[in-house]
Image (cartoon, rainbow, N blue to C red; front, side, top):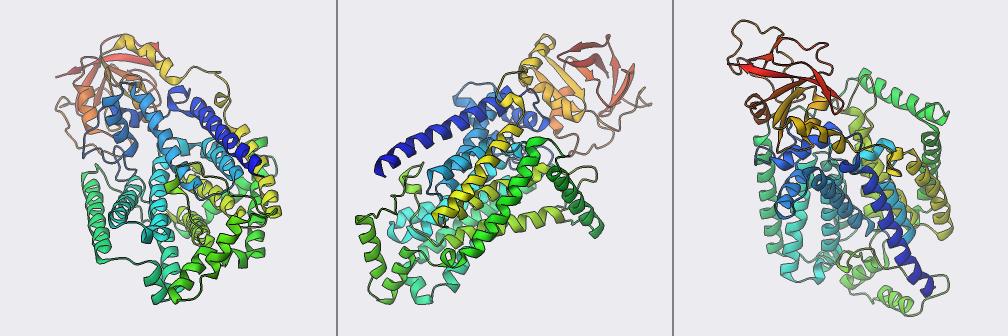
Length: 570
């Protein structure tokens, strides 16, 4: 058994590294033939970061710019193309999230399955590895906060005063960062903190709580100061945002019913092999079986799962002055391994993050509750509702936490049940991987960044185009290009009086994201209008942002985009 354990650990680490490497090579933005506008905005923010204006994604008061900020300062130390740095930093965030949450798992197979689920996900949820929304950064912050809370619960009383203050501060800052990156994190934090509060105030008496978790007034002061600083930062970020939205608006009953019915119909089509493809249908059947089997395991082994961990019972007995039989039993078992018990493998990260025995219901309950509350919130939130399609990107949180919850549950049940669960998860992992685009496994298309390199012949220049393309044009080299989406209120043939800048106040938000980008475009020596969906033919004159632009040359095509040069009439 010891020999098998020694072989399993390095083999699992090798497989995990191979999964991450394959994911990076196939899905990172610098290798993608379908670079999207969200990535492009982050690339431009990385190049031209201005704080505090850019604390949030351009034109919004949500989606904190953690990845662009870290990438911006990393570029000052490591000279790379912004697109490469954004890709690297996104995967660093995903790796931090993985290491934190994988530390809650004991089995090497669980580590590998979690790595495959997160780094080679079902194609519908591949945005976990993208930056809009920045799920990797969000889960990195939540992972660090969760590891910090675990340390305070199970090792805080053993650490020195300065260690507790440091961990408290880092944990509070990680919570703040998670809320800054995504306000949706509040559901996770409420679930975890609620589970911890239930554990402390409902499962332990006041005497036991004081004996096991002896906190001082200084610890409370540290929590207060760190919390106040975090709240102040969030207020600063909101005050600096270019726009604000009402995210508390709910769907009407008709919208809710329409949304849920369309989701059910879509899932039903996949079950009938009439949906997105063969592998999606296989994944739908496997997901259904896994969820049903997990619910059965939860019911079948509910008593074992809800039973306090041995070390927890030992601490409670010590607090009551009872003989520490549980601790003696643990020591005896540790010294005399049986044939049915194999040693727990070492964790894939440093020892300070390795968990001590803990009540599994605390984490299992909080993660399961987050999934349930998160699904309800997404179905009710009006900003998620789309009448013509189901935006799967917003359900990445459910996918990511769902895998973690199922794997953690599998480690709380007997070995036979765990093997059956793994037997269902393995083909689901294969179906997820096979659903990914071919570029994840072979170089069939040129990366979008390489295609855009043809624009270098026009530099320096500016581009005005459709939202989903304009920012992408600048991502190849933000030093040489400026970009903005077009002004939808601009009139063709220039109405009388055009030429006065900003005769009307255009809104920063869903289309035009960046005001300084507009100013840079209008002050550029060469302006190109890119033909997409906003006009059929290049007009001789057109008003944009209060200026009259006059065509100064013939249209041409470069890098797959048809465009024409214009000059600004003063």
